[in-house]
Image 1 (cartoon, rainbow, N blue to C red):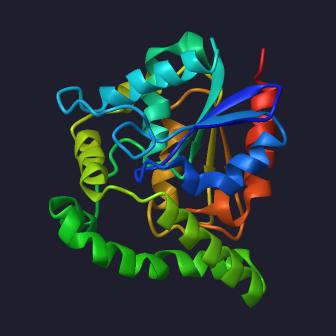
Image 2 (image 1 turned 135 degrees about the vertical axis):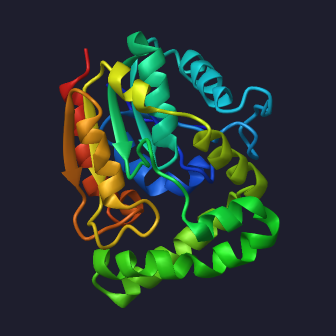
Length: 259
């Protein structure tokens, strides 16, 4: 678990890979501006919490209850990154008294469905893991080249990120289950039920090759009080390639809506 910084609090929920360690640059940048809490999704190594298959997506809401309680947070801002945005959304909709602000970063909106390639990965997660890893550079390198001007910066970033990922391995079958549970749910009513002011963050439209920017921006028409921001020169991993810009957007929104 990550818990650093002071002042207004925010809890950051990781993406479908489930590991907070992958987000360390963004978490450290945020913790210089506000109290920042993050954790690994239940079922993953280091989460300290088993998954109950019978509960499906509800596992993540109950886990978030426990995270807030353990951190002594009666109310907090929530930031969901990619898949984590759906957890944050459902939590804000069902527990409005505990959420002061909602941030959705490059998150799939209701109606999003996996591509054919993603569906093949979900159907055979272990067999598809090598292909998933092998195709990652093709998805991420264009935005790394755009966000980081020099080859030394790009190389240093890539090495550090590979080391973070290797030290905090994902579980492909668990990732597949997460997407399967999400696909069985309709989050539209959750959008209508959100009471907290909401910030939607995306990268440049041409650079996010994981969740299309137009999909993330659908939230602007589904949630009542929404502001949209773009992290320029990035795509899906703007919180890593430009962590200070991400932290500035998020912390300003958190402080503006803290009580």
